[in-house]
Length: 194
Image (cartoon, rainbow, N blue to C red; front, side, top):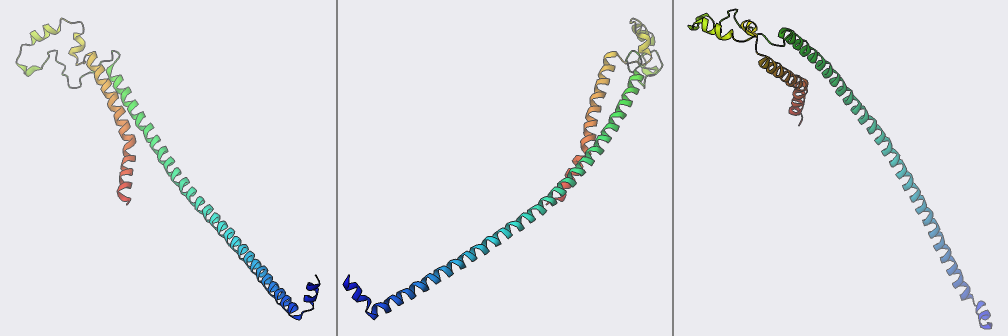
């Protein structure tokens, strides 16, 4: 220990300690200043990042509002088209119902349709057939519904078949009329799109 105390009196040791202290001080200053610069850089980076995120959120909100407005506009247009089509469909269905009612009324209480081109002759083929009318008249006289057949009424089976076919044709016509306008609009829209 005495050796250590004697060494403390050595001026070179004090100079060495002073240099070491100065280097330590400068190193600590560089470290602490560099750390604060790094902290400042980090704080700036975080601020920039939060600002960029806020800008992205604002842009996203604007884009979302625009897309919602577009969607709402398209939905309103589709609803208007649907309403228009429903109105047209109802009008077409009413027209078909009116025509069907007229056809049922024309069928009469028996439900049998009348041939609009039948002549009032009791004979089957008309005057120009060249066949004797008495044979046709006597053959027709064997049935109970001869008076109705002579007036151009169609058979119950044929009347039923024609009425069923008319209902089916009307259903097909309604379906076609309902989707025709939309199909044409879709086709035209597809031909315009790239």
